[in-house]
Amino acid sequence: ILQNRKTSMPTVVLTGAGISSGSGIPDYTGTDWLDPTVPTSEYLYSNFISSKRSRELYWASCERFRRLVSRVDPNKAHYALRSLELAGLIGTVITQNVDGLHQRAGTANIIEIHGSIKKVRCITCSWSDEWTSFIEGQGANHICPVCAGLVKPAVVALEEDIPKEAWGAAITAVDRCGILVVIGTQLQ
Image (cartoon, rainbow, N blue to C red; front, side, top):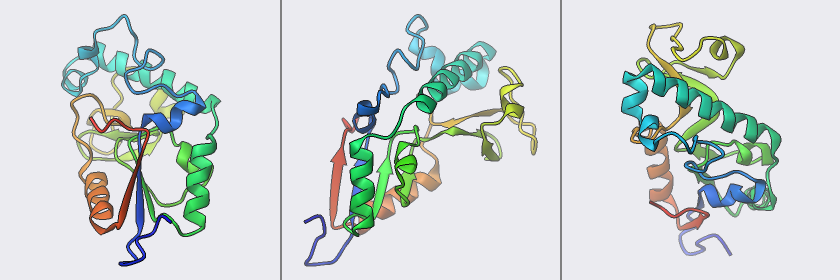
């Protein structure tokens, strides 16, 4: 059903916030993540770079979201995609979500175009690591151990570019697919 039988090209699935809402995950600008009393502009990538206050707000919002994600489980939609992957009916899941629920459901071939809330990365040299107690203990000015650049949660901030590697992998997967299934995204 999900394979283009004529060309034998793989099916690719693109998921957005709607697929995780059944697990209790709000969308990126939901009040469970961003503080509704703070102007959204404070969360812009340019402000993260230039303002200690914005960095503090961004880290705090990501920590709130990280705690929320740790308390929820993948839902039937996540497990259904894993079953389709195991059956060979889909090749790749491209997700806009940063919650890691596809991985927790067991899906293997995933491209996270907006990053992962479980990781941190340097904005200068792209050093990356798991969100650790080392990072948590540094306050708003998390410093890269490699180049001394600023470290941020490895999720794409408002107005930040999608990482080239993730974007390139997503474009390649879509270019090579026979069918693209879009689930739970407004594609804005």
